[in-house]
Image 1 (cartoon, one colour):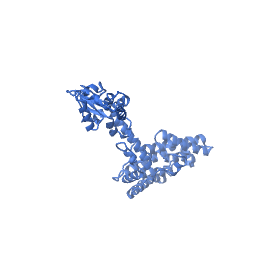
Image 2 (cartoon, helix red, strand yellow):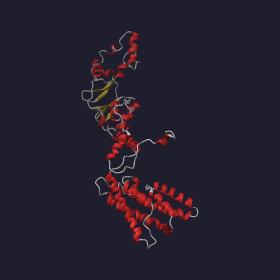
Image 3 (cartoon, one colour):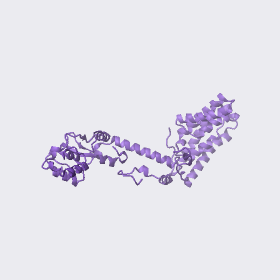
Image 4 (tube, one colour):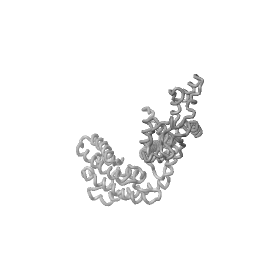
Length: 204
Length: 178
């Protein structure tokens, strides 16, 4: 059990027979159930509760509200520095009025570096070591608006969480901007938000 | 799990109950059985009716000693005894010369019907069996056996359970009615 790497272990799996036995002692009267049956029941009930919550929660209830953003006019150097500082691999791009313009992610940088075929950091390192040049230099002086992904998929704040999760899975995206009905950014829903809220659903 | 591994068991037995639980189980069982036994031995001996059958001893374990159990709830107590009694009498009437078959069909069918009606109550199996094993008095009752003693006796024991099981702060009965 100590090998688990997901954000939080399922409490039901941590229950030992002794825990159940001690709990049963606290309830006066004869309980017509074995510790093993209780654990099995508890695990299933926990799973059921998790599914029920997952199917009824709204995006706004678990999204990240403090979002790091950039403007379309933000120079790429500054955008990259901001992403590095906050240890994030992508961020929403918003207009002055707060509406969503697009998303800027690592992938957008990769696509504009070198010959444009690299999709990972290691591929870029290999490429620049072989050619002797820095593939990032060609982006110097350019702005966020020029390389960002736009238009982007967004979800409304009152969308159901499981619909947003399904959308992210189907489109293969790690983050989706959350907006009001005027397309103004309210927050961002990331894969790690989902992982923290539902550790057992790992591969959302 | 492997077939033979399953036979080793997987978990611990439940804890022993407190002395107060033992006391209230004893008190409930004493008063419950006293009521049906008094009626049986002191009020009914001149009649063809009876009020006490062996399966009530088993019901007492559940409704006074394991009162939280789903098996001990009113639905199970009343439904289990009445339905099993009907099945027991029917088995005897239809299969009587073949006593081994009547006994087996009575108990097995009682379990199946109690499952299907969500009235599983282990003493019901005994109630069905007693209808086949009998005494001459029980045979003579015919289907009345389902009402006297099975249904009526269970009702009296239920009233005692409601009165006694709710006295101590740590106990309540029933968990559900139907």
